[in-house]
Length: 563
Image 1: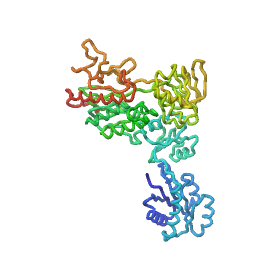
Image 2: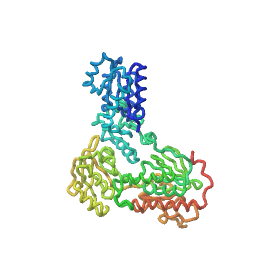
Image 3: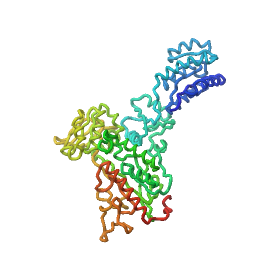
Image 4: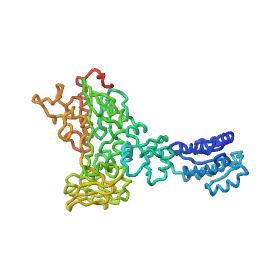
C-alpha cells in the first residue's frame, strides 16, 4: 500500500522548498510529501492522485497566491478529498481571511509565517491533525475500478472476466454514484463509451476488449516457448488436474484458457459434495487453489487465449491460437469442457448481460438485492445458484421444465431448497419471452395454465451445456452432439483401427483418434459430469501421456510450429 500524501502548495519557490523539507524530515517515514507551485498545478496533481486511488491526508496551503487563493483552492480540493485535513499558511495581514475560512472550507487550522522552529510551531499542530485523520481513516480501494451503468452487457462482461480471474475490482454505477461521474471527468473520458475501466496506476480504458484488459492487468497472454512436452487446452477441474500432475512429474506444461480458470465449475457459488471439503467451497476457491498448485509446479498458463486450429505434423501437435501465434507439443490434452446452452426465446439475444445471465453469475448476486429473480434449470448448478441468490434477492423462483427436481438434482440440494423461505419451485414451467428496452423488465412464463407476464430484473439460465469442439471437428472423432470419442469408444474401420489412426499400438483409454491427443473431463463422450470424475480424468490422461512419450517419437519439432 502506498503512503498517504501530504500536499504543500505555495507560489514562492523558496518557501515551498523549505516547507517541503521540514515536512519530509518529520513525516517522510509515514507519508509521501508532494508539492505544487500554484492552485492550478495542485488541482492537476490531485486529479492524478484520485485516478490512481491515492489518498491525501493533509493540505498545507499558502493563502496569498495569484490567480487562486489558498481558500479558493481548498474549496475545490474538498470535492476530491473531503476527508483530508486543511491547514492555511498566512501572514499577519491575512488573519481575517483565515478565520472566515474556518466556516467556508471547514479549515482545521491556520499557521502564521514564519513557522520556525518547526518543532514548536509546525509539528505539534500537524501531529494532532494527522492523529485525528488516522483515527477516522478508511483505506481506499486500490484495485481496478469500473464506471458504467448497472444494466450493461459490456459492464457485465468486464466484471465477470475480472471476478473469474480473481482480480479485485470496485463497481461504480454512473447513474447513482457521484464519484463515478467525477472519475470519468478526471480521466478525460466524459465523452468516451462506457464501461470505463480505471487501473491502479491511473490508466483509463474505455470499453476495452477482454484481451486488452488482460494485458493491462498483467495476465500472461503470450507463450514463453514455441514447443512444450504437454499442452492442456482448458483450465476447468480436468485441465488443472492435468497441469498439476504433468508439471509435477517433470513435463514442461502449458495451459491455454479462453476465459478464466475453473471452467464451468469455477462459476459455481457452492460445491458441497467434493471429497475432502465437508463444509463445501466455492468454484472460484477451487479454481484459485488449482491455479496456485499448477503454477507452484512450474506450469505456464495463458489467459485469455483460445485454441482455434489443430494440426499434426511429424508427431507434433501444433495449435494455432486466437492471436495468430502457434505452439507445439508432443502430447495434447483437450479439456475444454462445455458451455451453457443459450436460451432460444424472443429478447434473449438483446438482453444477454443486461438482466439475462448464463451460469451462476456471482458478479451479479449483490446487484439483485431486494429484487425478484428467476433461475431456469433443474440440475445441481441451478440449485446452487438459487440458494446463493436467495441470500440477496427478495425472492427466487426456480423454473423447472420437468415434473420434479428429483430427476436431475442431488437430494441434499433439494432439501435445502425446500427449507429456504424465499425460494419457490415451479415445475412444468419455462421462459417464453423476455421484455425490456435497455435492460430486463419482465418475463413471459409458460406453464399448465397458459402464459403469463411477470416483472423480473434478472434471469439466470442453466439449461444444459454444449461441448466446445467446433475447432476440432475436422481432426478428431466426435459424436453427434460434438463430444470427443476416445479409447474403446472410437469408431473403427474393418481392420479394427480407428479412422485416422497412424501408428501400430492401440489407442489408450483417454486417447482420441489422433495419437498423442487425449481428452479429459466433460468434453469427453459419456463422461460423468462431476468435478471429482473430471479431476480423475485429468490425472489419468497424464499417465497415458507418459506412456505415449516413452514410445517412438519425433526427434525435433517441425519448423512451422513457431511461424
